[in-house]
Length: 227
Image (tube, rainbow, N blue to C red):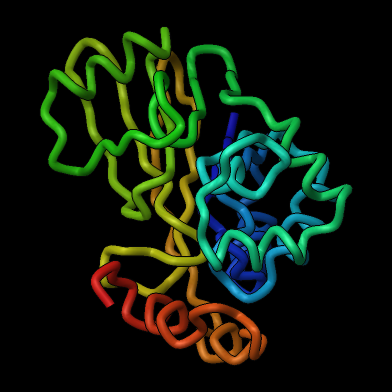
């Protein structure tokens, strides 16, 4: 079995299409979206409409929650801008997304099995990775949220994989990122896929009324959070 998992599109429709094209070439049996679809980039509605139309399993990310009709979203100009550009149907769809998707012994979450917003970084120790696997009740956990693709292993316990970010990687490599996992015998073998896309085309797509187009375009180009 082959599984493709992508996350953290954040309104970058150009990067999304590049990743989906690469996924088609890889011919996975299942494709899963792991959250954070619309907030940040220039085309929130386009991204929601595209992924929603695929009919694939999807889970919600922390920024997806901010854009729905759930109470107490952050008081932020970017959140208000993106919410205003989502159709009622898109916001309703985001509201209904589940926290987790499971496939046998594999769990897909946005951030951790216990939180939609806690961060587990590549320097996480074995104790934290073991907690990820134990609380997920799985031998493999795949997540997004931190925008930094990596693979961690806990001997005798399992595998933790971060799929990176489609729209805004934060590891210095501007190419879009997603995870491909192949089931071989009793376990999964992970691969991090990097996909080049037209960054300048995406940067040029920011509308004039976006609250911070220059900063978000710089995030695309530099693939660093500290811009």
